Image (tube, rainbow, N blue to C red; front, side, top):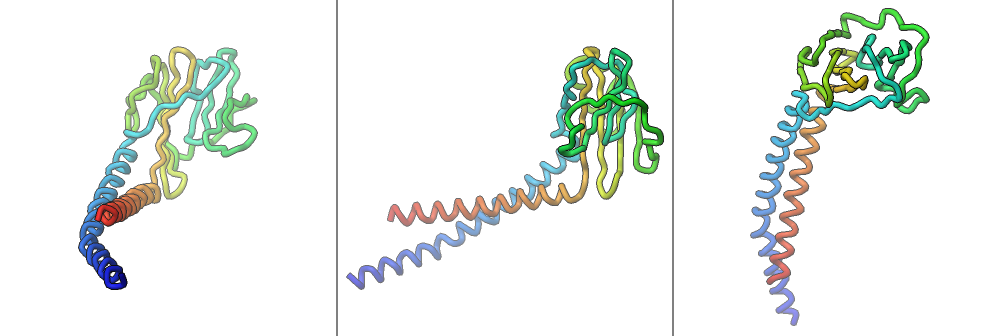
Length: 205
């Protein structure tokens, strides 16, 4: 019995050694696949191909986009009043809703970090995304460089009085995070597949 058990252990060790190249090959191949997949995803993202238009919900209809930065948007409603939407306010009381403003702020555009362009369509700026659902009557393109990243924003007013936005935040850290995450995921997947194949073959024998 002891001899049989020893032989069985020796056989399993030998089989594990023989299966090691397969496991390593799976890890290497899927790591490479993950690296290139992460690079391609980041490329698509930087080109704005993964960004979609989103509607800013409102109980009123708008007639004009008065002014905009990548952080704030001011629009005139049908009743003539001006409302502001805070695009990056976190979880404050004024988040996720239009807020009535008494007067427009001054000097909100710093030309060194903020560039704005207006048009009747969104065929402007760096990306020129296809407009949102509905006919676009006014589009505002905003480009900001608030730090070591940049924000590209489009705001579109449709003929139904709705306002939509398209936003892309570009920075090197998000690129590195996407590539490294996909690379690590490929390596882990390769290791798991190799271990599963090894144990299945061991169980069959």
